[in-house]
Length: 58
Image 1 (cartoon, rainbow, N blue to C red):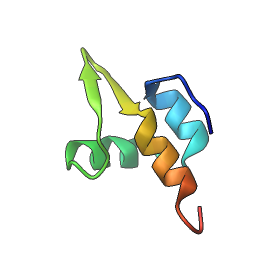
Image 2 (cartoon, one colour):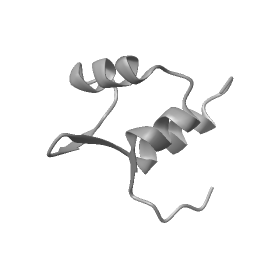
Image 3 (cartoon, rainbow, N blue to C red):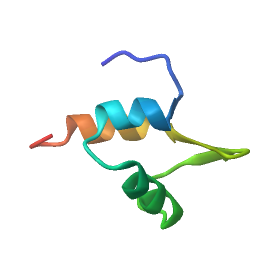
């Protein structure tokens, strides 16, 4: 998956990963999902999304 995008916003992550919005926020705040917060917006690094998608059973 050759991707040039560095960060995904929450709406993009929700369309890729089968989790609830609250679940993603909680996992980010607990450090289970790496994230970058800019103002009130939360972004997930593309390397993490690729890691999730490439895991066996994903």
